[in-house]
Length: 249
Image (tube, rainbow, N blue to C red; front, side, top):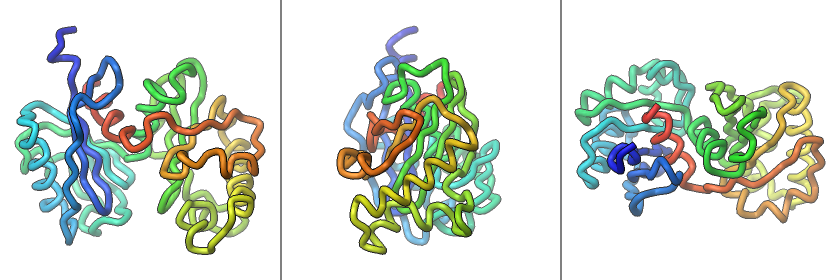
Protein backbone atom coordinates (compact mmCIF):
# COMPACT_ATOMS: atom_id res chain seq x y z
CA UNK A 1 0.00 0.00 0.00
CA UNK A 2 1.47 3.36 -0.98
CA UNK A 3 1.70 6.24 1.45
CA UNK A 4 -1.17 8.05 -0.30
CA UNK A 5 -3.44 5.05 0.16
CA UNK A 6 -2.50 4.96 3.85
CA UNK A 7 -4.40 8.21 4.36
CA UNK A 8 -8.12 8.59 4.88
CA UNK A 9 -10.30 11.43 6.06
CA UNK A 10 -12.81 11.52 8.89
CA UNK A 11 -15.46 14.05 9.88
CA UNK A 12 -17.24 13.98 13.24
CA UNK A 13 -20.59 15.84 13.29
CA UNK A 14 -21.91 16.83 16.70
CA UNK A 15 -24.65 19.08 17.99
CA UNK A 16 -22.22 21.88 18.88
CA UNK A 17 -19.22 21.32 16.61
CA UNK A 18 -18.06 19.61 13.41
CA UNK A 19 -14.49 18.29 13.45
CA UNK A 20 -12.34 16.71 10.79
CA UNK A 21 -8.81 15.67 9.90
CA UNK A 22 -6.83 13.32 7.67
CA UNK A 23 -6.10 9.97 9.32
CA UNK A 24 -3.10 7.68 9.10
CA UNK A 25 -4.89 4.39 8.48
CA UNK A 26 -1.84 2.29 9.31
CA UNK A 27 -1.20 3.83 12.71
CA UNK A 28 -4.73 4.79 13.67
CA UNK A 29 -4.06 8.39 14.50
CA UNK A 30 -4.65 11.84 13.05
CA UNK A 31 -2.17 12.81 10.35
CA UNK A 32 -2.67 16.54 11.05
CA UNK A 33 -4.28 18.74 13.68
CA UNK A 34 -8.04 18.56 13.38
CA UNK A 35 -10.13 21.55 12.34
CA UNK A 36 -13.30 22.35 14.29
CA UNK A 37 -16.11 24.61 13.09
CA UNK A 38 -19.24 25.30 15.20
CA UNK A 39 -22.30 23.40 13.99
CA UNK A 40 -24.49 25.84 12.04
CA UNK A 41 -27.82 26.84 13.54
CA UNK A 42 -30.27 25.70 12.41
CA UNK A 43 -28.35 22.50 11.74
CA UNK A 44 -30.16 21.51 8.55
CA UNK A 45 -28.62 18.90 6.22
CA UNK A 46 -27.65 21.53 3.63
CA UNK A 47 -26.03 23.84 6.19
CA UNK A 48 -24.12 21.02 7.87
CA UNK A 49 -22.97 19.63 4.52
CA UNK A 50 -21.60 23.07 3.58
CA UNK A 51 -19.60 23.15 6.82
CA UNK A 52 -18.28 19.66 6.13
CA UNK A 53 -17.17 20.92 2.72
CA UNK A 54 -15.31 23.81 4.37
CA UNK A 55 -13.33 21.37 6.50
CA UNK A 56 -12.48 19.19 3.50
CA UNK A 57 -11.38 22.30 1.59
CA UNK A 58 -9.21 23.35 4.52
CA UNK A 59 -7.07 20.27 3.88
CA UNK A 60 -7.59 20.31 0.10
CA UNK A 61 -9.06 16.79 0.45
CA UNK A 62 -10.68 15.72 -2.82
CA UNK A 63 -11.27 12.01 -2.28
CA UNK A 64 -14.05 10.11 -0.51
CA UNK A 65 -14.36 10.49 3.25
CA UNK A 66 -16.09 9.04 6.30
CA UNK A 67 -18.53 11.03 8.38
CA UNK A 68 -20.10 10.33 11.78
CA UNK A 69 -23.57 11.47 12.74
CA UNK A 70 -25.55 11.32 16.03
CA UNK A 71 -28.34 9.16 14.63
CA UNK A 72 -29.32 5.73 13.40
CA UNK A 73 -27.86 5.51 9.89
CA UNK A 74 -29.13 2.92 7.40
CA UNK A 75 -27.33 2.82 4.05
CA UNK A 76 -26.65 6.55 4.13
CA UNK A 77 -30.13 7.53 5.35
CA UNK A 78 -30.39 9.15 8.80
CA UNK A 79 -33.43 7.68 10.53
CA UNK A 80 -33.29 9.72 13.76
CA UNK A 81 -31.85 13.06 14.87
CA UNK A 82 -30.24 13.74 18.25
CA UNK A 83 -29.26 17.35 19.03
CA UNK A 84 -29.61 18.36 15.37
CA UNK A 85 -32.41 19.65 13.15
CA UNK A 86 -35.37 17.31 12.63
CA UNK A 87 -34.96 17.71 8.87
CA UNK A 88 -32.36 14.93 9.16
CA UNK A 89 -35.02 12.33 9.96
CA UNK A 90 -35.32 9.97 6.95
CA UNK A 91 -32.94 12.18 4.97
CA UNK A 92 -30.67 10.61 2.33
CA UNK A 93 -27.79 12.32 4.07
CA UNK A 94 -25.05 10.61 2.10
CA UNK A 95 -26.59 11.97 -1.11
CA UNK A 96 -26.79 15.49 0.36
CA UNK A 97 -23.14 15.34 1.43
CA UNK A 98 -22.12 14.06 -2.00
CA UNK A 99 -24.04 16.79 -3.83
CA UNK A 100 -22.90 19.67 -1.62
CA UNK A 101 -19.25 18.67 -1.09
CA UNK A 102 -18.61 17.04 -4.47
CA UNK A 103 -17.07 13.97 -2.78
CA UNK A 104 -18.41 10.52 -1.96
CA UNK A 105 -19.27 10.16 1.72
CA UNK A 106 -19.79 7.12 3.92
CA UNK A 107 -22.09 8.07 6.79
CA UNK A 108 -22.04 6.15 10.07
CA UNK A 109 -23.51 6.44 13.56
CA UNK A 110 -21.06 8.30 15.81
CA UNK A 111 -20.83 5.60 18.48
CA UNK A 112 -20.35 2.93 15.79
CA UNK A 113 -17.41 4.89 14.35
CA UNK A 114 -15.84 5.22 17.79
CA UNK A 115 -16.35 1.51 18.39
CA UNK A 116 -14.61 0.51 15.17
CA UNK A 117 -11.65 2.76 16.02
CA UNK A 118 -11.36 1.38 19.56
CA UNK A 119 -11.55 -2.20 18.25
CA UNK A 120 -8.85 -1.61 15.65
CA UNK A 121 -6.44 0.77 17.36
CA UNK A 122 -7.69 1.56 20.86
CA UNK A 123 -8.55 -0.21 24.09
CA UNK A 124 -9.95 -3.29 22.31
CA UNK A 125 -7.13 -3.78 19.81
CA UNK A 126 -6.19 -7.11 21.41
CA UNK A 127 -9.74 -8.52 21.18
CA UNK A 128 -10.14 -9.14 17.45
CA UNK A 129 -11.49 -12.63 18.12
CA UNK A 130 -14.16 -11.72 20.63
CA UNK A 131 -17.29 -9.65 21.15
CA UNK A 132 -16.54 -6.07 22.17
CA UNK A 133 -19.11 -3.61 23.46
CA UNK A 134 -18.17 0.07 23.32
CA UNK A 135 -20.37 2.41 25.35
CA UNK A 136 -20.06 6.19 25.18
CA UNK A 137 -21.35 8.09 28.21
CA UNK A 138 -22.21 11.74 27.56
CA UNK A 139 -25.42 13.66 26.89
CA UNK A 140 -26.90 10.26 26.09
CA UNK A 141 -25.55 6.72 25.91
CA UNK A 142 -24.14 5.56 22.61
CA UNK A 143 -23.21 1.96 21.88
CA UNK A 144 -21.25 -0.06 19.36
CA UNK A 145 -21.00 -3.83 19.08
CA UNK A 146 -17.98 -5.29 17.28
CA UNK A 147 -17.89 -9.05 16.77
CA UNK A 148 -14.60 -10.58 15.61
CA UNK A 149 -13.59 -7.20 14.22
CA UNK A 150 -16.89 -6.65 12.35
CA UNK A 151 -19.33 -3.91 13.30
CA UNK A 152 -22.95 -4.78 14.12
CA UNK A 153 -24.44 -1.34 13.37
CA UNK A 154 -27.09 0.79 15.10
CA UNK A 155 -27.46 -1.15 18.35
CA UNK A 156 -28.86 1.85 20.31
CA UNK A 157 -28.36 0.18 23.70
CA UNK A 158 -28.68 3.57 25.36
CA UNK A 159 -32.43 3.33 24.79
CA UNK A 160 -32.99 0.01 26.53
CA UNK A 161 -35.84 0.19 29.01
CA UNK A 162 -34.53 -0.59 32.50
CA UNK A 163 -36.77 -0.39 35.58
CA UNK A 164 -39.35 1.49 33.52
CA UNK A 165 -36.93 4.17 32.32
CA UNK A 166 -35.06 4.84 29.11
CA UNK A 167 -31.56 3.81 30.20
CA UNK A 168 -29.76 6.99 29.18
CA UNK A 169 -32.21 9.16 31.13
CA UNK A 170 -30.85 7.56 34.32
CA UNK A 171 -27.29 6.51 33.55
CA UNK A 172 -25.84 8.98 31.04
CA UNK A 173 -23.26 11.48 32.26
CA UNK A 174 -25.86 14.21 31.75
CA UNK A 175 -28.07 12.46 34.34
CA UNK A 176 -25.17 12.50 36.81
CA UNK A 177 -24.74 16.24 36.29
CA UNK A 178 -28.46 17.05 36.24
CA UNK A 179 -29.18 15.20 39.46
CA UNK A 180 -25.87 16.16 41.08
CA UNK A 181 -24.99 12.51 41.77
CA UNK A 182 -21.69 11.67 43.41
CA UNK A 183 -19.47 9.04 41.81
CA UNK A 184 -20.78 6.24 44.03
CA UNK A 185 -24.43 7.08 43.31
CA UNK A 186 -23.80 7.28 39.61
CA UNK A 187 -21.77 4.07 39.80
CA UNK A 188 -24.88 2.34 41.14
CA UNK A 189 -26.82 3.51 38.08
CA UNK A 190 -24.08 2.27 35.77
CA UNK A 191 -23.95 -1.04 37.65
CA UNK A 192 -27.62 -1.62 36.89
CA UNK A 193 -27.14 -0.63 33.27
CA UNK A 194 -24.06 -2.74 32.57
CA UNK A 195 -25.52 -5.80 34.31
CA UNK A 196 -28.60 -5.55 32.10
CA UNK A 197 -26.55 -5.24 28.90
CA UNK A 198 -24.20 -8.05 29.95
CA UNK A 199 -27.15 -10.38 30.34
CA UNK A 200 -28.35 -9.52 26.84
CA UNK A 201 -25.19 -9.79 24.73
CA UNK A 202 -22.48 -11.38 26.91
CA UNK A 203 -19.50 -9.36 25.64
CA UNK A 204 -15.87 -10.33 26.19
CA UNK A 205 -14.85 -6.72 26.85
CA UNK A 206 -16.63 -3.45 27.62
CA UNK A 207 -14.91 -0.22 26.58
CA UNK A 208 -16.24 3.02 28.05
CA UNK A 209 -15.83 6.22 26.04
CA UNK A 210 -17.07 9.77 26.38
CA UNK A 211 -15.68 12.51 28.58
CA UNK A 212 -15.99 10.45 31.77
CA UNK A 213 -13.53 7.88 30.40
CA UNK A 214 -10.85 10.35 31.58
CA UNK A 215 -12.26 9.99 35.11
CA UNK A 216 -12.45 6.21 35.01
CA UNK A 217 -10.69 5.79 38.36
CA UNK A 218 -13.33 7.91 40.12
CA UNK A 219 -16.43 5.88 39.22
CA UNK A 220 -15.21 2.45 38.12
CA UNK A 221 -14.53 1.20 41.69
CA UNK A 222 -18.30 1.49 42.25
CA UNK A 223 -19.16 -0.77 39.29
CA UNK A 224 -18.86 -4.56 39.42
CA UNK A 225 -19.15 -6.42 36.12
CA UNK A 226 -18.28 -9.98 35.20
CA UNK A 227 -16.87 -8.57 31.95
CA UNK A 228 -13.59 -6.67 31.96
CA UNK A 229 -14.35 -2.94 31.91
CA UNK A 230 -11.74 -0.53 30.51
CA UNK A 231 -11.59 3.15 29.51
CA UNK A 232 -11.42 4.11 25.84
CA UNK A 233 -7.96 4.71 24.43
CA UNK A 234 -8.57 7.16 21.59
CA UNK A 235 -10.77 9.65 23.46
CA UNK A 236 -12.10 12.51 21.29
CA UNK A 237 -10.33 11.31 18.15
CA UNK A 238 -12.12 7.94 17.96
CA UNK A 239 -15.02 9.14 15.80
CA UNK A 240 -12.79 10.75 13.19
CA UNK A 241 -10.48 7.71 13.04
CA UNK A 242 -13.36 5.22 12.86
CA UNK A 243 -15.16 7.15 10.13
CA UNK A 244 -11.99 7.27 8.01
CA UNK A 245 -11.40 3.54 8.53
CA UNK A 246 -14.93 2.59 7.50
CA UNK A 247 -14.86 4.84 4.44
CA UNK A 248 -11.63 3.21 3.33
CA UNK A 249 -13.36 -0.16 3.47
